[in-house]
Picture (cartoon, rainbow, N blue to C red):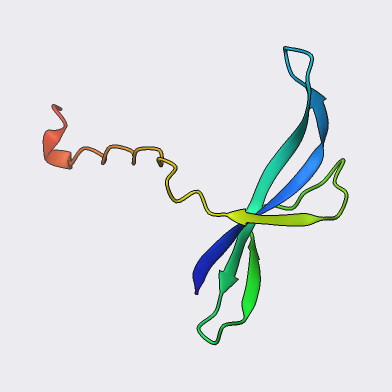
Length: 81
């Protein structure tokens, strides 16, 4: 299966420090496409609280930079004691 879209839920409104009302979003999973062309939803989180029941699908952030991978753990021979 390959990811096609990201699944996003709207979790109500908030006011930013400039006094503007904004919508709070939570990425809850991905829409996947199977080899036969059908679709399924992989949930990574379940929205709760001020959720209206709708899930929106948006393009994947393929151009967005990923966080760097953590440094590998030191090998036993590198430990000085």
